[in-house]
Each structure stands twice: as C-alpha cells, then as structure tokens.
Image (cartoon, rainbow, N blue to C red):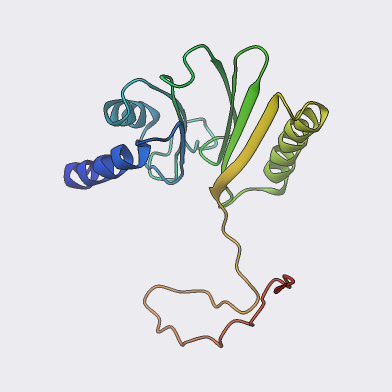
Length: 181
C-alpha cells in the first residue's frame, strides 16, 4: 500500500465494489494492520473492519505477506454486534455478526503456506459453525470465502524466468461432475 498511485486505483475499485454490498472480503491486501485500517476506513467510511496480518515467529507483523480484511457495512447492520477471531494471522480470519437472535458468520481464508495444524484448527472452527447452522438454520447463516490455491493434476507449475510450454488441454470434465439433463 506504499505506492500512492496503486493505492488510489485500488481505492476506486473497492469503492465501486462496495456499492449495494453489505459484506466484503479481501485477501492479499499487503500492508501493516494500522495502514490497512486507515486506508480501508478512508475507502469505506462507516464500515466495520476486521483486519489480520501475517506474523513472524516473534509476533511481528510481516506487512508484505498477504494480509486479510472482512468489511461489514454498519448502515445495514446498525443494531448488530461483531465478534472477530483470527484463526491464522494473515491467512484465516472469522467474524460473526449478530443481533442477539440471528447470526451471520464469515470465514475468510487464504490457504497459502498453511501448516497441517493450522488447517485442522480452521476445520474445527468451520465444524463448530456448521453445527450451529444445522441446529437452527432459520437463525444462523455462514459462508466460507477466500483465495484457495490448488493445482489440478494436469496443470504445470509456472517458474518465473523459464519458458512455459503449453500444457496438454485439460480433460473435458476434470473434477468428474455429472453434466447434462
């Protein structure tokens, strides 16, 4: 977020994206938590922001490592409270917005470089949310969103600086979906 021209362009895109929307999720935001809060608050005045940045082993922020944001439009959620939980700093953040009777949970994930333990922790959190939705689907709603990086069997890895041979065409139905009437 240090390039002011890039920040201005992204700001216009975020403002346009926010029109007629009540919840926005972002991954790969890049910047310190304070800088992200300040910038997004300018772009989305009146919105509540949940921000999480990647942390080093000593707990310091790593501001160019893929930070995350969940933004709630408080004009729509005026009488709601928000509870936030950072499951994996800079990689998975969750927020629940509730009016005391109804609850809407959002989990925003970027799966890059997650450890097995982190994936298990995220899975436990998702299972807990799913159980609440199953118990009372008329008052509980949840969504998982994010940047999920999975390589299909037929894909080749792009290595910068090396020529990229065209890979074989993907299979007609790579994940085995049943198609047709």
